[in-house]
Length: 475
View 1 (cartoon, rainbow, N blue to C red):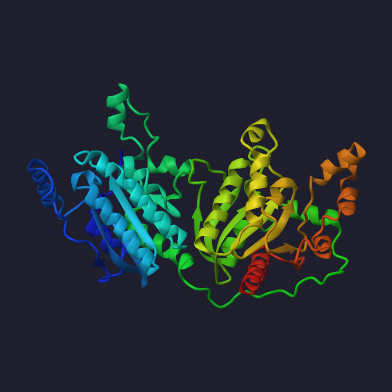
View 2 (tube, helix red, strand yellow; view 1 turned 60 degrees about the vertical axis):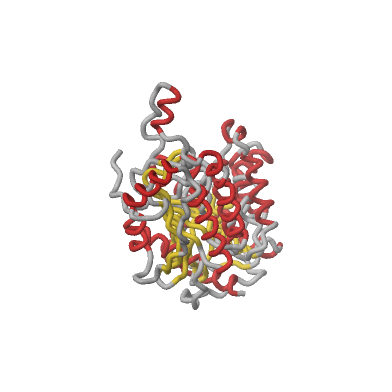
């Protein structure tokens, strides 16, 4: 398969880290306990690779931010992980945890070293234990999968990142295709174990060349490590409680109109340094939601938003979208970052497939997760807020609504059918049900309403919403 250039471990260190910042953490490897034949293999591998093991670890900096770096060297026995390499990785992770710095890793490995068998195989557990201790400390772990990454490496430290990317054309899979064919007598289907397919399926977040890895780490760390900066967006005076407000049906029509500001506008105009994350990282992806690490008016946060431009009758917001939302919630909680949710949906998917994939359960689990989070949470009703799909992202500690946003248990047309047997009284139902932002403010379901102006562009409203989010998160 057409992969990019295969960088060595030392070249990758130079690509990613600030010049002169790298400090090796590696102790010499003692091979005296191995048999003579295996010792010869290890010496030959060291000569071939220019490294003493299949992994190099150390400390460096990315644009001045300290990080621990773990890099596979494929030229050393196909990057395989033996006992010494596994101990080197686990020790580096624990050292990073003690120092309170992120870990960034780049894999390229055939997996467990067969010469060392089960003793090496079970060391993947200790690497995983160290990484989970690191994550439990609220520290970031970023992973880059190079060609090839297979076996126990992919099934342990290669799959535990908060953010995971793979290089273009890389073979990434649990079982190497040659081994599969030898065991099963027929080849593995082409194209499955590729970086591009895994990104499309929501297993990895993106396809990123090694040459672009430094920029990706810089984007991620700017959110995960850097402190908030001063506000730059202009905040509007909130709509006072008791205001008459717009006619409900007028607001509903406005939020359904083409060109209405959405989550993409909020990120484009009100945010900076955005890094999109795609999929659940468990094999599902739904384009109707956006998950991102970003900075809204200078405040680093995790954002998950419903994208009304991607929700159509043919592509409604399904269970996978809500599982992506719960991934965002878990990331925010674990990384100790504020969570911002954006409500903007005509409703969740209603279909036999959605029922069988637990749409109701996913709505319930999103609500349950949100109401038990310990980090600051802000939800924004940006436009349409229809049904359980809207409720799934609503119950934050602070709820903001734009002036024309609305929230209802069903589309007004559906409520009209239930009450009157016709859709013709939808406007009447919207008014009677108290769906408007100003009604929600009066009832206490919304804490602040951002005014909208008749001449607002999507950029104008995005700036105003970002300013209000930043204000609320600054406390």
